[in-house]
Image (cartoon, rainbow, N blue to C red; front, side, top):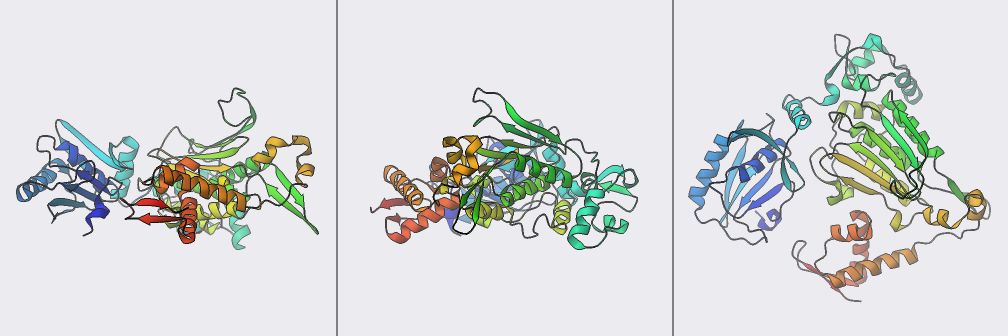
Length: 468
């Protein structure tokens, strides 16, 4: 086993210097959290500064750990104890009988692993774990509403347009939108023309300025949408279209359009937040906020597995669907793909824009309770210097944008950071320059290839050596 891979607290790993015999909860809560999420390893014998200090009495401490897990965690999760170079490693499997509670000290609490923390679960999170234990998701649960009370014209119209076939009554049961007794599942209710699930709404605002607190306190346009998820998607996309502008420039034999936002990018972002949002978060809806310089799309609920997207490689995010029934229906309606490539498509659509620069890369952020996509306005620097009324005609005179100068400036900025702090991480660089980690990885790869920098040591403890 490669111990270095286990050092450092992440969603899948936690470390403790010693087995605290008088503070059992301090480490038992990590066992509960791992069992309730995607599993993980609890490592004893590593200090806070990541030094291997070892455990004094491995045999005695291992017996205590095993005993306390069986006494304090209910139900007992599947786990393995491993002795490895003076360390005790407790491998906890993702549980099937969730939730797993810590029982002791006069309390019963279930924990969830979010980022590098084990946090107490709230009522909504406990309900998710109960659903998981019976292999059921929110969208597959019964809504309690009769299908005969609702119409599905939006669903039928889209299905006919995409497949050329009519959406017949038996399809509702085939696609798990209704049960055998004519009761809609939550997925079916969310797709009804007059959706009865009140918190399935989208609020859209076009603000005057670069942020809500810029002193102007005004909105150019605002709207609240309810109804079928298909209506929410199309009406939200229409709101964005009417509140953005498209510049253009003249080419020798044609005209080249330069929109503020690429339609494929914001449309896929809207699809993702509507399909993958956490519908158990009551009192919270999807929001679209447009400012002069960027657009932010917010969705209730973080990543399904509790990870933080800003800490992940965006090119290698596995497809994990919170609402698989909805995802399947939207794939059949040709709104999304089955392979979970939404994030990549959002990034690609922006990068292929003629007015794209590295500073305009989409930004993804998540925590325990939210997921946000930020799309920078591709034309913002041009908007700032031109009169709005003459926007299109003046932009026809703008020369073709090149990336060379901008890429060189970014490379110089990264090298400057590495020179000041040789141990700087890719995540730290991404946060400093305001770009995605994927972009930073690409630039660093170029710098390594050109010999301008060199990596001395491994990923965790290594340093950057600036050559030029």
